[in-house]
Amino acid sequence: MQKRLTRQIMIGNVPVGGGAPVVVQSMTNTDTRDAGATVNQIRKLAEAGCELVRVAVPDGTAADALQEITRLSPVPVIADIHFDYRLALKSIANGVSGLRLNPGNIGGADRVREVVSAAREHRIPIRIGVNAGSLDKSLMAKYGHVTPEALVESALQHVRILEENKFFDIKISLKAFDIPLMLEAYRKITAEVDYPLHIGVTEAGTPWAGTIRSAVGIGALLSQGIGDTLRVSLTGDPVEEVRVGFEILKALKLRHRGPVIVSCPTCGRTEIDLIGIAREVEKRIQHIAKPLKVAIMGCVVNGPGEARDADIGVAGGRGVGLLFKKGQVIRKIPEDRMVEELLEEIRKMAYE
View 1 (cartoon, rainbow, N blue to C red):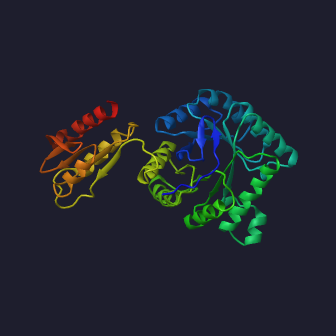
View 2: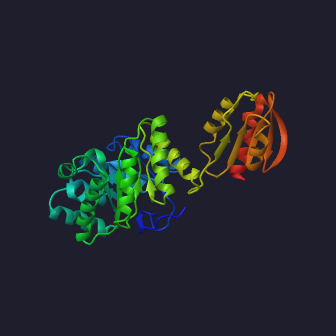
View 3: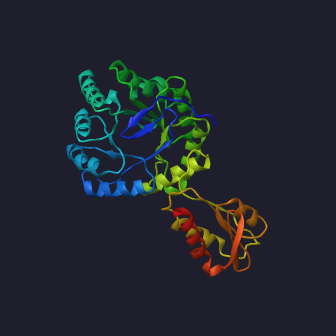
């Protein structure tokens, strides 16, 4: 697929846009005022592969905590600011690498100029984040309801404010729960600007439903070459957001991080506990960063062929499995040893 070429911005040491790999980010759900808890969560996110992390900054105490958070964070930190320009200024002073801020919502021109001046001085990009659930009342009156055109117009209004202040380190998001609406809004904005785009389905839901909705929306945009960084928004542990984000990118062959499991859906020919084996292996290899293709197949009909195509895999028989590695049969494994012996081989390959 042909990726849309955008301008490149730097968020800390992470390039976004301009042909760089699609960046996976998340947002903490800790109280930012608790710097210790927030840093601990950021570390867990980073271990899962998170490359940028956003934190809510609701008040001055949270902004003060950013000094320690940014000092200890293993990845660049983005401050999420609403309405109060002073929180943006304090966040910049305390070491953040990016802002999520809509300049039309922080007061008059003098306040915008002050924030833009500080962001320019510290080389801090600004993400304009338009959300279908909080569209400006004037645009709602103009269009009658939330439309792709309304979302794009809202974003461009904020963009113009920054551009009038000679600020161009901009990233844009146009998020909505309604996937067709979101897709059309992103398609339309690509015809207007070449700034990098942050993509995602807002308020996607719980991990099960939200993963499906996010995969459909984010995957559709990425398959059209649209998107420079993404967040999967789930009601749950933000580490799951990172894992889902990478799975979407791996499915489209846009990023390669961690193992991919190929496993059959089971049928009446299956004579091992394929479901249990696949779930256990998947759970225990989540920490591995090296790209590997792991096949866990239930029978000899499709199993051997799929397993031979994998880096490592098993194809089940009656209470046993054949272990394959790089297309070669290594040995036969009894079912009660299948998980442990497969994991041992995966570990060898991951760290060799």
